[in-house]
Image (cartoon, rainbow, N blue to C red):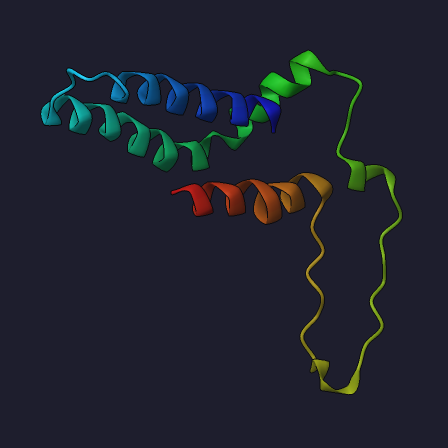
Length: 106
């Protein structure tokens, strides 16, 4: 996650510094915003790359959910017959955290 935020914030900071210049014109503004939008759109498919970078930096660290016990939710009568979705820790983090953040930013 740290690598992802570092990439996003560095790009936004770089664009922000240029936009604060008094002599900037409208065309330059548009040209600066386009790569930011592309970065946000393409970062959704970059989950594996960010994960690989992190594993290189911290090879002995795993997802927290991989080392904790699975919680079993109590069924209530109005739950229906739909089985619970079981995801491994990696998929759960990717779907519930990473993709959610990327979708909110984009």
